[in-house]
Amino acid sequence: MEVESQLKHEEITRRIIGCAMRVHTELGNGFQELVYQRALEIEMSLSDIAFEREKAMSIYYKGMAIAERRVDFFVEQLIMVEIKAIIELEDVHLAQAINYLEAYNAEIGLLINFGSKSLTFKRLLNRKYKQA
Image 1 (tube, rainbow, N blue to C red):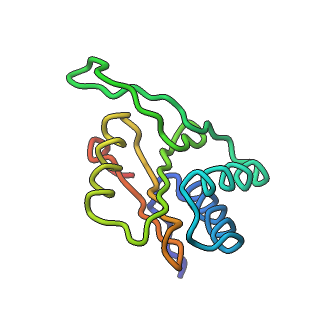
Image 2: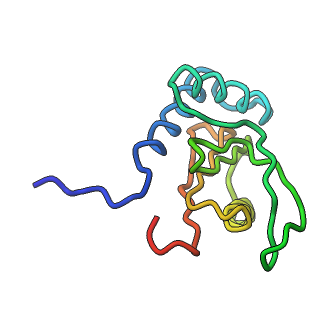
């Protein structure tokens, strides 16, 4: 019996993670975030994934834009991707990414860390949406 997937945008998130895995396999850990960002840009382009790199997005408070921040990647106009190059993701990194996700009003995000020996990632869900 096959179980139907219930994760929204699962196919594209899997493709993004696959690109990140190929980058990590090729480069390993130990580089600065910018190196991984540039490599991931190349890998997603080769995989025909539509994205904007360093996309400026407004942060809203009570419906009013109060600041602007650049997200590492905004993929397929759907998924916010933040990358890190640190030894271990901590709760503060996860909280920050979730805050950005909600402030941008994006439904789904990925937090990807290239800094550890094995690639690590977290799929983030915006609490404002019922099911993501």
